[in-house]
Each structure stands twice: as structure tokens, then as C-alpha cells.
Length: 221
Image 1 (cartoon, one colour):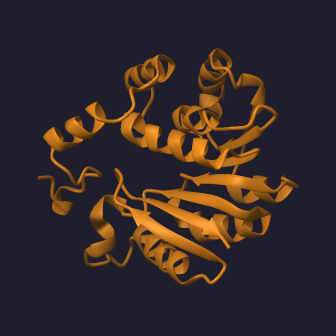
Image 2 (tube, rainbow, N blue to C red):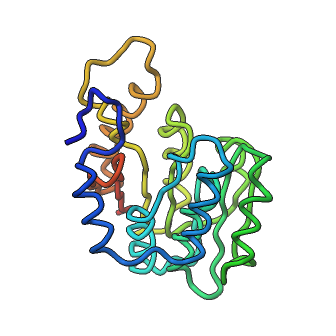
């Protein structure tokens, strides 16, 4: 069993994680290739959502059937394509990232998918891009710099349709949320405040799922 002390984002044994993947929906072939190339060529490949969490994102999107999706933190585009699996035929996904060097990598896979023309890439800081989007969203996925999670959330809530869903990744932060907070650990401090905000905000209802590094599902009331 993985322990918090190891600072791993995997809290289950390798055998259990393998069992979970084998008894969940198969990873689509395009995403398997994206996954492989990310690990071969891109720094910090552990940031990838991966097979199991990707299937969770896909299924949630299919249940929601969003017309408008916002993703904060594209990385190599794996989660983007998972979220697109449930998008309506005339829907649009806006995805934001600060890494210019990943734009072409993302677009290569987006254009190999059925949703290439429905994905709009935004290069820049989320806190600066979000205010420029004069849209209402049905589904939002937050998976970027943890220090800004509260800022992203407060920007997004007024842009959500009633009944819309906000998904927040890494909210268990390798188990640091239940460890002694270090004075200089701004990310963990922010996530602790963020998790409390989602729990107590009367505008929403929230459940925190122990999927991978923690995934919160928040519904707008």
C-alpha cells in the first residue's frame, strides 16, 4: 500500500490500480498513443490524467452532455479529448494553458480526433484568459496551478449554467492535505482553503472522490 509519506499520488496498491483499470472501459487507441508519446517526449508526464481518470472524465461528460466546456490546464490534451467525448455535436471546448511549446503537440492529437474543430486553444494565464470569455459553461475542469484554484473558482461560478458541473483535480495533493502544513507550502495551504470553500459554499453541492490524486465534483445549485 502506498503511503502519504512517499508523496505519491497513488494511494492504492499497484495490483488494485491494475484491477481497476482492467475492469473499467478500455482506453481509446488515440489516447493510448497520446499517453505513450507524452511519456516519451514531455517533461512531468505524471501530470497526464491517464487511463482510469480519463474514463471517469469521459463518463461524467457523457452524463452531462455539455454544450460548452472550459478546461483550465491543457498539458498535452489527454483530458481535453476525454471531456470532448460527451460534448454535444455543436458544442465548443475552450482549453487554457501557459506552455507555448505544447500548443502544436496538443493540436496534432486534437485534429486526429472527431472534435478538432470544436476545441479552441488559449495560450496564457487562466486568471487573464477567463475574464475574456463571455460565455456560460455546462462543464469546467480545473487542473492548473494550485495557488490559483480559489481565484479560478470565483471567476468561474458566475459563468456557470444552473446545474453545471465543476471538476477540480489534485485536491488530495499526494496526501499533503492531512499532513502537518509546512509554513512555505502555498499550494497545500490553498488546496486546504479551497476544499473547505467547496464544502461550505451555499451556491454549490460537492463530493470529493478519492480518484487518483483526488477529484472533486461540484454542482451549481
